[in-house]
Image (tube, rainbow, N blue to C red; front, top):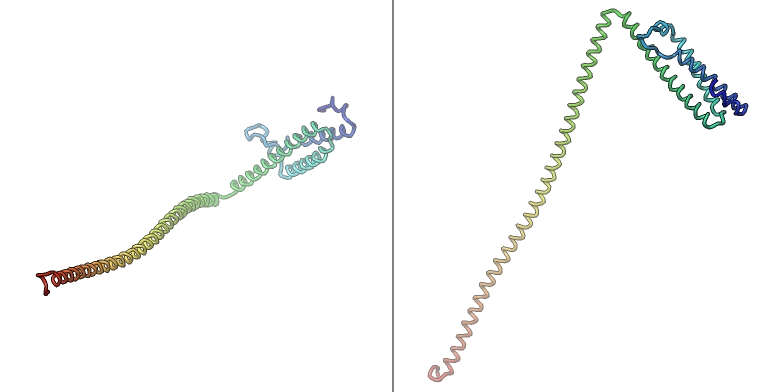
Length: 233
């Protein structure tokens, strides 16, 4: 038995726990060896076929019980290194048991399908093959439609972005048009004011000219009337 040289140095309770663990582990490994799926080209093909589904279920149940017993024994081992080592062994047994169960489940499914096809008439097999062909064609058509749908969605998004851009440009153009109309009204008002200032300037020019003419007329009249020889006196 493994670790026999260490068991003498351990307490009695832990030594019994290790003995139980190793014994249950040995049983579980023997059951796993029965559940391992051999190579189909090997010589033990007949041995593989002798295991019925009921026998496999019984071995799996026994193996599950062994794993539960190992899980209950493992916490009773107080040595941390040994508990870690046996925990790794227990994890390996659990993983291997799951793989063996999955392999036998797949084998059962394959056997069931093989027996179904072997007992099915050629007409039904042809119909099944035609159905598979139609399913593959349907899948390819569905994939093509999905790609077309995706492309249409991308085009719709692109058209939506272009429409949004055009809408924004229209808003900007309307804003520029309103500003242009405002500036046009301001320019019209300014033109009217400039024309009014021009008329006022002309009128002021006439007034200044008339005032100058009146002033010089008054000066000449005063000179004509006061200077000797030029006036009435």
